[in-house]
Each structure stands twice: as C-alpha cells, then as structure tokens.
Length: 340
Image (cartoon, rainbow, N blue to C red; front, top):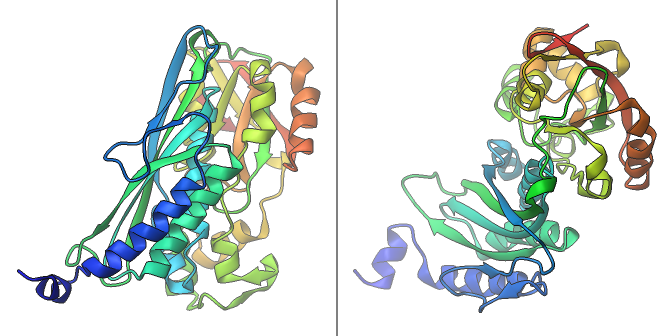
C-alpha cells in the first residue's frame, strides 16, 4: 500500500509527521532538571528527585471523558489538554505526591496538525504550570474506530512522595472537620448527562447564552479543571485525608478515604450550588440524590483535618486563589457519607 492509499484509508502520514514535529517542540519546552533521554525516544525518562530517603512513585491514568465532544462542537482544542493534566495532578495530590512526569494519549481520526498541536499545547501548559515534564505520549490515527474529527484524550501521571509521608486517610478520626475546596465548574465528570440536558432536552447550542452562569454553554462546560496543588501541597502534612471529587460525586469519593468506624457527615446547607448545577437539575428534572452522585456540585476537593489546622489550610488556599469552607465533620459510626 502506498502513502496515497494509506491517506485514502484515513491516515495521512505527511500530516502526522508535521504534527509530530510541532508536538516535539512543545515537549522540549516542558523538560525539567529531572528529564533524561531525547525527545522522540521510545520511552520517556525522568530521574527521581535527589535527597529522598524512601521515594515512592505514585501513578494514575485517566481521561477527560465526553468533555472532548463539547470541545469538538466548540472547536476549542487546548482547554481539555490542561484539564487532563490538572485532573491527574489532583488524583495523586490526595496521597501527598509531587508530580514529576506526564504522558498523554490522543486517539482519533481526521484531526489536523493545528488541532493535534492545540490539544498538546494545553497539556504542555498544564505541565509547565506544575514544573512537570511532558515525558512522552502517543497520537494514534484510527479511522473507522473514530468518526472524522472526533478523538479521545487520556493521560498518565507520575509523582513521588516519601513513603512515610504518603496520605492514605487512615489517620481520619471522629472530630475532624471536612473542608471543601471550590470547583471551577463540572471539571471532567458528568458530561454525558450535562450534554443530554443542555443539547438534547433544552435544544441549546454551544454559543447559546446561559444567563444564570453569565457565560455561553461552551464557556460554562469547557471551564478548565482546577488544580489544587498550590493550595494543598505546602500544607499536606496537616491533613488526615484528601478526596478528589470526580465521578461519583462527594459520596462516591469521600467514602474511599474513610477508615472503618468513621462516618462523614456533610452539611448540605454549608454552600450554595453554583448556577450551572442548579440549571442542570431544573432543566433535566434530576433528583438531588442523582445530582450528588453525578456532579461535584461546586466542590472539587475535600480535606479532612483536625479543627485546629483548618485556619492554616484556608490561608494556604486563599493564597492560591481557591475558595474554601467547612462543609461537615467526621463522626464515629458506620463507614459512609451522609448528608444532613
């Protein structure tokens, strides 16, 4: 099969090479003192930071889900790249890890060089913001598996922490308080339901105005996932547990860090849902229980800590520009999450 036949089958090698050249420059720009090896090698390489007694690698792989479909509709390609980095940073931050390397995966069909580069530009921007190397990745053209112009975006993050300092949640005890950290919207979860409500049920377009949110549908849905590294990493030794509120909402994620015999009681009146969530509930006729299971409802992270350190945590969050509030407490009881 000639190159022309391969292009007719849906894979343009010439465009692929152009995209790789653009991406290589973006990757080069994220290299840190821990980076090893050449850009474009078969494997990405980073050193473990020096001076650690018992360094432990903490890793996570995730995607931005169907948020990419909104990005395709809006023809915006860089924000979801930043989303996947920030989401992944938060996933290992809950264990007290410092991010040191990231790898991305883009699978799709019919994406132009500019579109692919736009996605990776967002990834690179997220890596630079966290002083983390974009150590490598993969772009796969798969016509037939994806409709032309569609793609999937996933990433793998590598972080490191001293083994004795890893946060597991086992120190959480009755009397600890729950500190909520504000989200910047849906983050990267609940988009299948949000899209169904806004686009199918309410018949809105990406450029439709959502008066309650003071933004368009595209701006509201493509708001970049908040990273909590600056707010929490400097005070990580003060917390007993951290929960990143992703798929499953507050109940599905907070329960993952609770030890046996501890119940988390969330005061539902301690905050007001941001307008986007209220609009989704009303427009979709969604029950409050289901809203809590699907969306973060304005809470992107929860720290569980002794009452005496809450002012320290809030001061660190304020410095990072993140809103916080006490949204409940830990009590003795059967392991679980309860709203009051």
